[in-house]
Length: 498
Ligand SMILES: Nc1nc2c(c(=O)[nH]1)N[C@H]1C(S)=C(S)[C@@H](COP(=O)(O)O)O[C@H]1N2
Ligand SMILES: [Mo]
Image (spheres, helix red, strand yellow):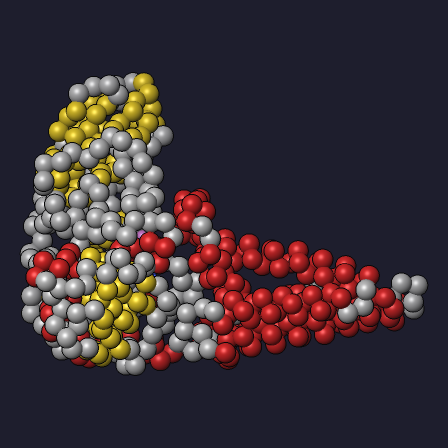
C-alpha cells in the first residue's frame, strides 16, 4: 500500500514538474538506454510496439515486490523499511535528473513520493503491530487507513496523469494552428496502378494512424512549434544558423512519397511504411551554412541530428548532399506531423534505415566525423552506416493459412530505396522461380507492389519471394538477423491447400 501511494504521489508531483520526471518513466528511460542491444532486439521482437507498455508494467511489478520486502523489513525492525523506501526514491531521483533535458527539479517527484511512502509505511506498520489481539477498533483503524491509502494513491495517479496531459496544451494548439504551405516542388504525379486491387495487400500509402512507430520515448515529446528552434553548427559550418518553425515554412517547400523502414524489421516484418512527406531540402540548408560534402573537400563526413529527448542519429553527409530528396519534414500525408512521428520537424533520408536518418523531434544538427563521434545506436552495437537492403514480403496469402485449390493471388511489396525494384519472383516449393507482375512504380524511393496468379494444388506448400533492384542485384538468400545493419534472407510462408 505504501509503495503504491509513493508512486501515486510521485505521479502527481511529476505533473507539476514534467511528465518525463515520473519515476516509472525516468527509470524506464534509463533501463532502455542501459539495456544491451541484443536484449532490446529481443524486446522489440517479442513485444512489438507494446514493448514500452510491457517495460512499464515490469517496472511496477518489480517495485511491488520491493515494496513487499520493505514491508516485511519494517515489521522486523522499525524504520528499516521506511529507510529502504527513501533509498529507492533516491534511485528514481538519480534516474530522473540524468534523463535528457532534465533539471534538478526532476528529482522532486521521486523524492516526495518516497518520503510520503516511507511515512505511510511507518504509520501502517505501527497500526499492524497494534492490531493483533487488540480490540476490534484498532483493526478497523488499520483497514481504514490502508484502504484510504489505496484509494488516495489511485486518485493521485489519475489526477497526476490528467494534469500532465494539460501541460502539452500549448504544443497541441501549435500543431492545430499549422497550415501546410503549398509545395513549390510537388511530388511527381503518382502513376495509376501503384496500388493493386488484390485483397490483403496493404495500401500503397500508409495512413498516419497505421504507420509503424519505433523510438525510445516512453512519453511522446510534445513540442510547442512556436518555441521550437533548429540549430545547425559544427565542423566545417562557416555560418551557424538557427531556424524557427516559421522560417522553415517560408522556405521553398517540397513534397515527396518516401518509404521509411526500420533496421529492426525482420524478414517479412511490419516496420515499414510509405507516406507523402512535406518539408524543405536539408542539403540547401546545409549549403547555406557553408557545409561542403567530403567529395568537395568538406571536413565533416557525419551529420548528427539531436532530438529534444536526447536521441542522436548519425547520417553520412555525402548521402544527404548527393542530390537525393533528404528532407526536414513537417507534413505527413497532408497533415502536420503527428506527435508520435516527430512534430514539429523530423529528418528523412531516402535509402537509409530510420535509425541512421530519420530523427524525430529534431532540434540540432551538428557536423562532425564518424571517427570523432558515435551516435546513440552506434554506441549500442549497430552499424554506424546502414543503407537499406533490397527486400520483399508476401502479404497474401497469410502464412499458415488454409486455401481452396485453384487460382490464388500471391501478392506483396518489395523495396530497395534509391535503387528501385525491377523484378520480383516467386517460388513454390522446389519449383522454378516465376516472374511476378509488378504494379506501377512511383519511383526508386518507394516500395513496389507485386502479384502472381498461382494455380494452387492440394497439399502443403512453401512460397518464397525474392526481389531484384535497379542496380541488377537480386536480394540474397543468406539469412542474417537485424543486427548490426539489417536482416537479409527470403520471406517464406507455408500454406495448406485443400
Ligand atoms: N528522436 C528519435 N527519433 C527517432 C528514433 C528515436 O528513438 N528517437 N527512432 C528512429 C528509428 S529506429 C526509426 S525506424 C524511425 C521510425 O520513425 P516512425 O516512428 O515515425 O515510423 O525513427 C527514427 N527516429
Ligand atoms: Mo529503426
